[in-house]
Image (cartoon, rainbow, N blue to C red; front, side, top):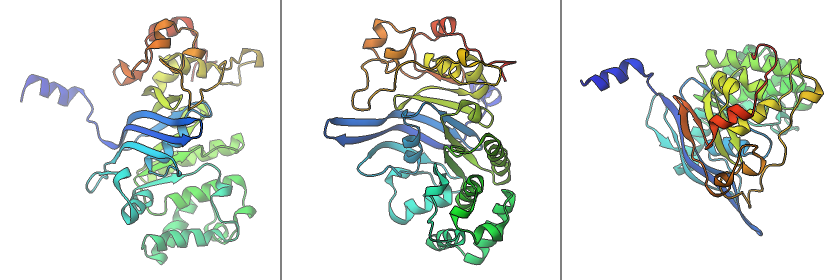
Length: 351
């Protein structure tokens, strides 16, 4: 064994990706042109980690989530690869699957909690039916599966028989969201994708859901992809952050590093637009301008029309997502200038 090989074995943590998204692009043909709502996104998700995907509304986060399960609604076209590496079994490219193979991966291996629990349950059926139908659709033993469902509901601080016998409109928002989380865990998936799981919940219930997610992640040995526009929410649970703007990734790195020392101008301005309890209304700095039209994404760097450090090069040339430090990537020509000119204030001690 060479010295280089020995050094790499001892100094570098072994990579164990459970998901590898490569050049994922989603587009829709429209009367006024082609709308690209996910643009050449590549990122790996390590087994056992929580990857937080953040960005303002309209940045492509939910489309990214749907792409992981090849669940983009028609007539959307998904191109690229989403390679799933199960802990036991052969790797598969999710967009290449169909029929029973795709259905198995979607629930048995990769499960998703969609935004808005109210629209996820049939209001004419008690919740028990949703659990039973899921088990039947995947040829699972119903008795054993329902016993498992009761255990998951108890782990989520719910009364199993009461919840299973209820209609969704009789439950609170927090109860519905936890019941949906239990349904997503029913078939014991390896990966859980959560699309804005705390949206429309009050602050106390958001905190409760986050604590429960951390508990079930350890209890059920999960890898999680957490989609949200809320930076403080995701910062408390994610190991790494992936920042999206204009339907692509502009920064990826360890959560604490991105929060304390973001490299992309958009990340830094997004942090400054996030309110905290020690900040007055006057101190909140919204990101000026608006997200680009997916049919008319700006030439060059898509952020340059809103960026305070852009120049002629940014208008003409698109920066690649490159490593600025080990394990930290950003798509910007002027990361040093961004840090000098855009001061980030998180308030308090920066936690």
